[in-house]
Image: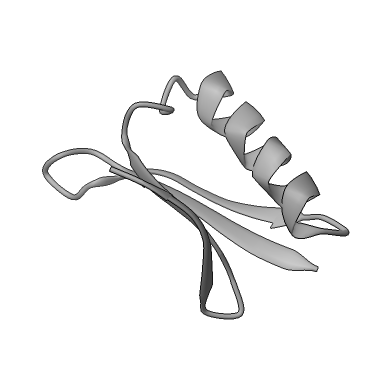
Length: 59
């Protein structure tokens, strides 16, 4: 399944926009958290979606 991870700065500029392929929501969440950490973006507003459904969101 395909998931999309996006992270934003406070001024709404996109810092991270990644496609994640994963077998389950839990796997996608773990991979998203790793990508956020790699980009040092875990404290930014971010979301993980799949087919329009919000899987993970943090402000």
